Length: 458
Image (cartoon, rainbow, N blue to C red; front, side, top):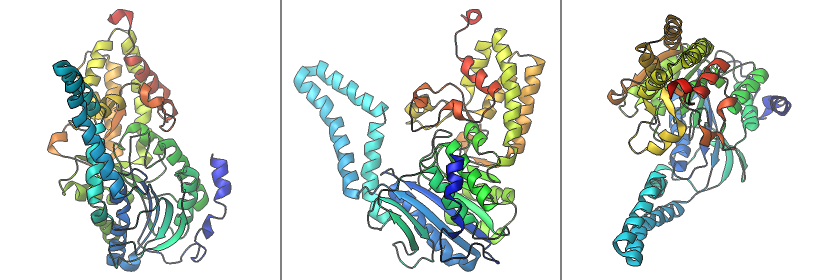
């Protein structure tokens, strides 16, 4: 994949032939944005970020340049409203039909089926489609279209997109090799003095998928772009759910300076994007300083539950310490401490934590890493295991540059982990498998055997 990508980006410097390959005096900040708006419910809100970039450009003038690659589903407001109403109608029809066909027993069966639809997320899907359809034009007063487009951001002058349309593909599909080409061409345009911010917007499932790409695909694209351009993003800002996840971060280690990510789900347009990027332009600083201020600014809005700035250059320290701990914990399992360790894993906060997210929580099986370490520390374990736990905690302190948690998430450490094998998720060809992450074998082996039955724990 890397070789094919490298061949495709040999001419990346002329991706936009009307611009110089590298301007001698570039802007303070350059934003490269990849927006996955291929899911109808979030489409208008993710796509509407382009207007935010335009407003930001108008405020910062030559101090900021921004370019956007966006993929859209082209779902109309009417289609979403119709779908939402159809789901609501099904919920009403099921128990009513059951009553007329089978009396009280039929009503009970209908209600049970209805409850199953709610548990499967169908109700939330209906609500999401209905209200997305209602809010669509208000959030995004742009004509509906499907496919991929790239824009060079210009200052805002109307509710619609005012930016320069660079390319358009009616059947564009998200592809990590194409993303590598795009990113390499963008970063080559500006000198090393320009801070590079990569903004990723779209659905996230931790390491499973981020804005239409698996985390290892994203990592390969970032590596290829760096090889071609000689640069890597100073900051990756992710407006995607559950991305402060060690399996995802292990894939992205050293691929950028700092990642600003959330351990929890993020509502569409929850991050105060314009304020975060305006601060990066006006205040500058190192990637760590920019990331820390982004966390501080976002936390003050009261709209998020968790956010952390992660030093991707130090993630290897954390995974190495987790490898050692994994080997120690595997030995503890062999020595009969399985229930103790399982109880510690159960005590750690689970993600997503929302009350209506029980299905996602049970399928994803993400738990708080710091909470697991804290719970383990109180168990009857060997001195070697306790020392390994301490090393993991010290590494986490180095990796997490800054973090914010709301009152309801005060116990969240800032980084989650896969606490059980995700068999159902591994079966999907569109999602990254756990074994394809860059986590060390010692830790993977521990996770794989933690929940298996053992004779001495029967």
